Image 1 (spheres, rainbow, N blue to C red):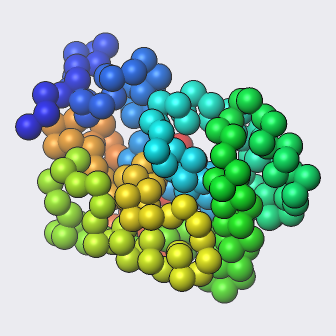
Image 2 (image 1 turned 60 degrees about the vertical axis):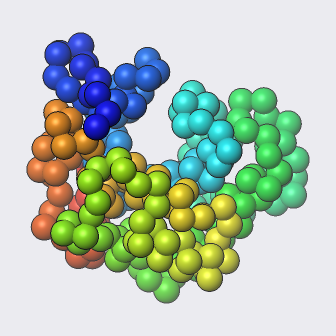
Length: 212
């Protein structure tokens, strides 16, 4: 078992939260807390796509730059981006300048608009893939799961890009579709406490993430 990281308060946390100074606040206030806001869900899917082949530390350090460059990840705004915006973004040193990933975010915003039109919200769709707690593996022992494979496959079928099973699993961890905090992590009970009984309930999904 991975040795936990002891935070400034002396309480144990997920080991990864101590590997970079900026990780602690992210771990304690965001990672693993249920989110039902479409804009935040779209942002995280986009940033996980940019992370592919890189480290989350790189992306987290540039997150505010990404938000500025991509209109705060407002889905309708990004869906209207055109070739001019692609070239603008390729010249922005504050983000990851990868044409394929930039074009994927724009494509995915358009696909997200289609999905919202059919499903009512992005949250209502992704939370359908919330696995039953009884089906979850021991925390932080996997990089993919049956649920992430299924969500990845469905998104790809709908035309989304850069949404492989590993990317989607990291998204599910971060957005609280699973509570993957280590068993002895002091934040795990708090992340669990604010979960409605089943986040896949559409009404519950609309409330999720209001605290964060």
